[in-house]
Amino acid sequence: STANFTTRVSRYGAESLREAALLIRAGEPVAVPTETVYGLAADATDPQAVAAIFAAKGRPGFNPLIVHVADRAMAERLVHLPPSAATLADAFWPGPLTLVLPVRADSGLAPAVMAGLPTVAIRLPAHPAMRALIRESGRPLAAPSANRSGSISPTRAEHVLGSLNGRVRLVLDEGPTSEGLESTIVAPEDTHIRLLRPGPVTSAMLEKASGLPVINGLTPGKVEAPGQLASHYAPSKPVRLNAERAEPDEYLIGFGLMPCHANLSVEADLKEAAAHLFALLHQADASTAARIAIAPIPDEGLGIAINDRLRRAAA
Ligand code: TXA
Ligand code: MG
Image 1 (cartoon, rainbow, N blue to C red):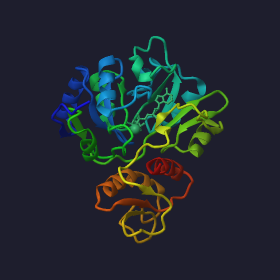
Image 2 (cartoon, protein in one colour):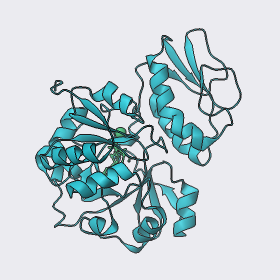
Image 3 (cartoon, rainbow, N blue to C red):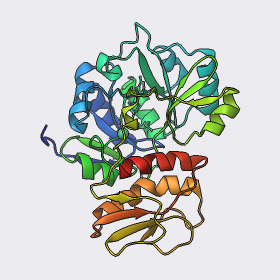
């Protein structure tokens, strides 16, 4: 598909919100911040609006979308929440946790949202802009990350513009996102929780809140969450992991006290590193260096989600 529109970036406020809601009601996607990454949001009940998301991103039709709701009642019109899901929703909503649940027959969702699966991914976000847009438009909003499919996720309005300029009419700008990594995705079962994508809500947090074990949820050979495809979130340059120092042609992204071109967190704080990760990958990609190198990140807690994204960036 080709670039068609003049893209406007507007500071989030009463006026830009009203305009965004009008676009949503007219079946147009709008880019909007969430606490994780910027999303490309459209009316999840409108097949043409959903098709416009796939077209703008160049996203394959087999990759289903996350549906964002403004409250629990809206979620319950789309899915039944079994007890394990209700416990997780109580603990982590609003926030960066997506629940994959059987979709109700009368959900009204456009079938392309689910890409043929009997389940739908649901999230109640914490960010005021996304919540206000859902309320103002009165619709559940399908929203993948607001970037071209497979490229680095956007944590700032300028990243959205860099990736989707001419492919979306309006970007609501509310500064850098706080979490910096996409939501954790789980499929809650009666006896365990299947983890489909690691994210800001860690396995330890899920186990503590639910009392259930968290297992790696990917069925081998079956692409259930294509965000889990080997190559994803990828810069245009080669990426080398676990780098202790930079080769002459490399841009080194550091962690903790070390000589480097940019640092994820001088204090070696994983939350700060997660918040900075995609912005520094964008920066490294835009630099004059031929290749990108990244320091080792401890593989524990939030570091598991960071390393998941880094492995896909390097694949
Ligand atoms: O933080 C986030 O989740 C962001 C913000 C905008 O909310 N959204 C996001 O969307 O990361 P996206 O499309 O980039 O990633 C959605 C992931 C994909 O890997 C998709 O395959 C998976 O969710 N997914 C969606 N529906 C699913 C389902 N029914 N079963 C399993 N995986 C599903
Ligand atoms: Mg994405």
